[in-house]
Structures are given as structure tokens and as C-alpha cells.
Length: 280
Image 1 (cartoon, rainbow, N blue to C red):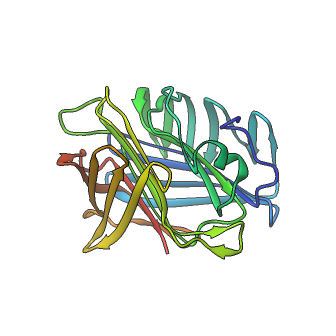
Image 2 (cartoon, rainbow, N blue to C red):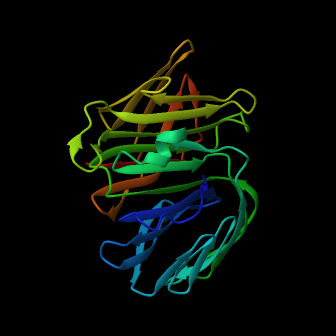
């Protein structure tokens, strides 16, 4: 299955990437809403801890098997050149030879749930980002890139992403738990869908609920807790909080920050570099 290419029958489709470079935490969505005919460039960023969201909607968009064009912004597999208000970027990235999907394998082809998600949690970025008069230069910077699509957005989810850990440059973490979803757009699915992917740089572990284990999430005071148990494997425990920096309301009922705190199995991510998003 082509992982990047547009899904022409999807009612809604997103591509997005995120990374932190110096004082800038930066996330860009390319969004195509075929059900309404609108597309959108959405930038969610924090510059020196100050959050900002920019929305640029248009009916001038197109997709081909290897390209997404929304207004004057372009996205291909491994490259994007675009702008939104006083924000612009010229970026290239590699996928890190790692992809994770929910649901995985053949289930992703069948698309039984509201949303299908594919993430490249080991992506690396090179290029430039300009915010106002400030320019940020990236050189093989770790980040993550994701593509998801479906009939509709899931009613509830929690997303976590961490690409920088204290004293462990090879450690990465990516997780999503769709707390509430529907089967073929009709029946509520009774079991929380989700995955976690983690690595210390040498030993990756991928747990998918309910394929090779169970992943559960619950709200805690100021954040979320995730537990994952792989069949025949180890148990992971994740705690995350929103952190002291106010999150962004990015629309669609989604609250998001890139200044969360996160600990997995006692390993702490670098403060100010963790993506946390919740809907519902």
C-alpha cells in the first residue's frame, strides 16, 4: 500500500509533521475535506512558549498520487514548500525507514474504522522555517510525520509524540488511542483502538490494541496515562501532562500542545518538545 498517496474516496484527509528547533515548536497540517470541497493549511506553533494557530482555507486545491497542492503550498513525499500569513517553510525529510499504522496491515486496506493513521516516528527534517523576521535552520533534525484519512474524524482520541529524551538521543515515542470510534461509520466500536511505538534507538517495540496486545488511556489530573501490554512482551506505562504552557485550540474540537511533559517506563522526555493532542 502506498503510504503517502492521497485517498480519493476519503471524506477527510490530513498530512502533518512536527518538530522542535530552538525556541520554535512547529506543526503543520495539510487538510483536505472532500465532503465540503474545502482544503486548509493549518499551522500550530509555539515561539518562546507563546502559542499561535494560523488557518488558511481555500477551494483551490488538487491531489495526484504523489502530490498535494493547497493554494500556494505544496507537499510531496519527502518535501514541502509553503506559507501561511507570515510563516513559511522549505523542508525536506526522510522517513527513517520506520512506519506504524492503526489499524495495521490488511486492516488498513479495508478501512473499517472512522480514521486510518500512518505515522513515521523516526522522520528527520532539513531545511528552513521562517516566522516573521526570524529564520530557523534545520539539519537532519528528528521529528515525526503522519498521514491519516477516513469517513470522518474519530469522536475522541489522545495523541502523544516525543523525539527528544534526556541523555538518550536515540529514544523515540509515538502513540495514539482512539477512545471512541465507529465501525464502517455506523456502529460504535466497544474496544479502544490504539498503538504505542517506542525505541531506545536499538530495540523498538510496537503494541497495537487489539492485534498483539492491549493499549488503554485514561484522563489524569492535568493530563493522561497510557498503559500498553504486548502479548508475550513487556508492559509499558506512560504518563503525560499538558505542562505549564497554555495549549492551542486548533479547531475541530482538538486541543494541542508541543510543550507537554512525558515519561515512559521511567524515561523522561525533554521538556518543551513533547506533542500532546486530545479530542473529545
